[in-house]
Length: 304
Image (cartoon, rainbow, N blue to C red; front, side, top):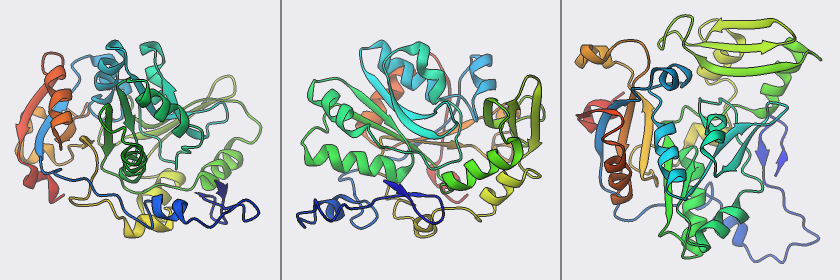
């Protein structure tokens, strides 16, 4: 995977080693979209984590954390997106609950999946339950790979309602332009502490005491993302919208919640959760005693 002219990671074939079998193109979700069979459930819930600290630190209702913690507590492993030391977004493997915080919060940058497929398949082959969390197309890629190896039984997929992925090159350029050589201490694309969930802020702590804290409506990077200026080209013709999800659970923000469920509209963040398979039902059953849930209509949220 190499950066293209727009700064996105794209596949590059070493033609000196290529045997022209065509398998890479056949497996590529952009060329051969993966579809899941019998994925007809659409049970939909409003939800949030009652742990105020986790909910506040999360981008929405804080639902991913308890899902992932349940997997690890039962001996499973979790793969999700995290920042590295240079605030490049990469998928990593987590097997300790103490490390789950790295996978929480939205990260509005294309994540690299490089180096996770081999350990993920090894975990499945070893009989471990594996939870993968990513964009719908990333989840489809993992689904297709595991299906080809006949290792779907222990694989669980969580994706999210995706706006599209911004360019890693643009993100790094933004950091370089704004902060130069100053040490960046933390990044939060969806900080809710200053103005709540609806008016979330991009907050970047840098240097010894520096603190950039700007609304998504005024920050240059967030405006370019939310106005679709720096998305990957394939995102404009996404193969995984509507009913084409391959996941067991889809998470998203319950925007417009104040319209039909004003009692839930506390501006602290509420998740919309779609259960899409029997595996998703299994995850839901494990959560019922620890999170706040309200069943709702899939059709009422799909229109947004």
